[in-house]
Picture 1 (cartoon, rainbow, N blue to C red):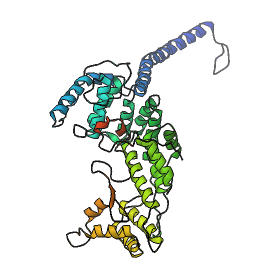
Picture 2: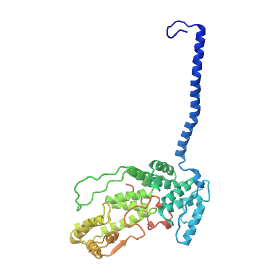
Picture 3: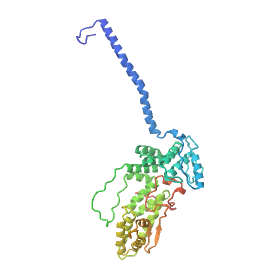
Picture 4: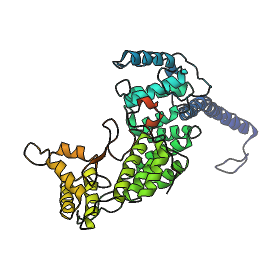
Length: 412
């Protein structure tokens, strides 16, 4: 071996001494590196395992053994007894069931634990037979999911989109939507559309002159419309109702009516929308005889501002258009003005509360009230309270039942 400083050969004994010193120096380094690998591997594995568990099991299974909340029940003794039975059924199992889920139509029905927990979640979310409590709803949805109810993923997705007592969590909402796709692909697409709209940036109004005497421009198509169309094609009633509302605002009334009819068997809001739109179409086909053809157009515009359909409700503009239509010969507008002035406000002007009630009326050319929406149901074109509302038993939904006839689904 050569001396690294001089380049000359070293004696044999010095070579052996140098080698032994190098080995003694290297041994601690090797031991330290080995120990680092040995002790850091379990920590890294635990971190990966924790991340995997969080992704694959967002609910702690130990929640099945946690006590369930108790809330005040209905005053009706029979309903209270049924609710007690429902809670007892939901708490009677601590292991998942693989049996087929049922569609409960009565809270007194003999339900499996997972279906009883699912129904309790729906009732707590919508305030049926108990005060509305989203936190309790999420508890029952979690229990239903742990017990094996696949539709419970819809409730948990909605809780992460809307926030059930906590801030919304879009990432976790996507996880639940993915788990719902196999059980209800149409509903999963609709919830994905809702989430995408929630995360979309707000449209900023552009300043400019506003001529309120002119018809409002047609509304823009729904954002992320591809998701909405796919949900409607999969048969989701909420998606069909949204498309119907879009076509209604754009003036495509026949298409909107077909879409409302197609969704009416499942969604109560769609059934109500179909009824209201059918009445409007029938009234338009038989307008009153007027001296000026523009009178009926102004009557329809007045109704639009009175009801806030496609535009913000504006009672001042509605009154102006009613007066113009009446002056041009519209008997409907004349009768509406008579109704408005029949109940003046405290200071002698228009009574705003009375105007709100009159917005739900349909007036015939002879002054007769053709239809008034029931006080228990939606009074205007709109949506169900949540995208889970149609999953409640029909006896607990306050809106009118769906129409018996069904029209061909139109997706546009």
